[in-house]
Image 1 (tube, rainbow, N blue to C red):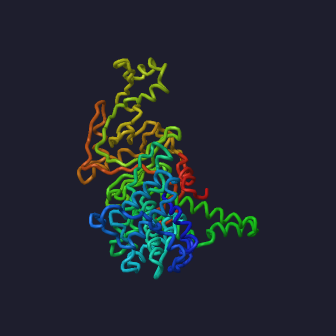
Image 2: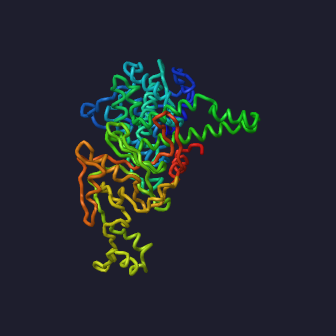
Image 3: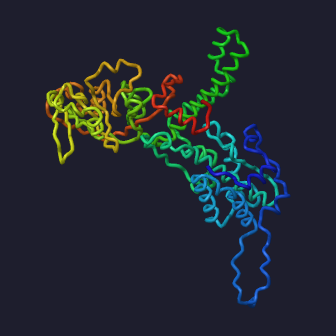
Length: 492
């Protein structure tokens, strides 16, 4: 994120912090007029020109308030050289946005705050409701004040709005910092878009808030965060303390820590939602790794929930979104080179006896397991072309589905009810059924295309809200949530 730079130090001495506004302050006193003369550069004495005055071409002068805006931007960018590249890019984009407007104010008209300014100010006060952290920014609402002070406040408000949109749209955390197998690339909102859309909106509060996710899963967690914060400690936890420990001071001290940890986990999972496409698709398949489950939705209603086996912690299933296009009955298994190298070297004769096709092509070893009951992919696999060469598939080792912690694969996703899933994907109303699919079993691969490509999302949520409104928690099987909390600076 970008910071206010040296301007913040001057403003800090004369205004109230965003923290104060969160406590209920909605109008701030005018900025100290003493800095008004420090905000713009003093006039430069260039001496007398030798050229006749009549030959000089004077550039049009900006209005004085626009010059004050430019001075405020220069002041605010004083520390940008020390900021990280991401922060510098945000600062430069903000500067360019004002320059494109001739340094005209964004939130002021005729010396008064616009309705949009007051609306976004209210939304900024409520940023923590979406798990955002704007503590590094100071927001001002001035009814009257020195011209230069108003210019500073306009720039400060723009920075806070840009920071809100940046965080809300997924810019706060780079998924790649957690794992290279997280392919999420949030569509992060830049300063120009944030300022343009909010300042022009009829409902600027709603527009700014809309940069947050709108999926039902996110909104359910947002509601749980509010409910959790409404109580000083969870009722169930306090009840346990009262009944088992007689509410000793030492035990009561646990509650705030437990509360902070729960808040941190909710906020972290809200952050994970920012990585997802805003439009998941009303018809979709979602595989939640920590839950070891796959859910199929039609018209946003869940129609199938099946257990799955996912990648081991040292061979994690990658996270990404794609479209499932077809399935293959009687699949053969072309063994990945990594498995050949790490697990099959020295076993080639044994593999041949087991029916594998083993051959060298251009000096490279290739191993293929033909279709059959013992095939590692089972009798059916589901294809969504991707750079990771992973897919969903059946498995002959069905006993593993009885385990509660099902992280056993090399990265692909094994499905507990593959033919039931296939029937639902191909649609029974179009004549498909498990029985029809099983009649296709044999020694030859059979490809069946879906009626239309189906969005599929491989996601990672350690906390969800079920249909009954209950908060559910799952093991952080790959440690992603822990890493995210650390990067976000949240309590653990």
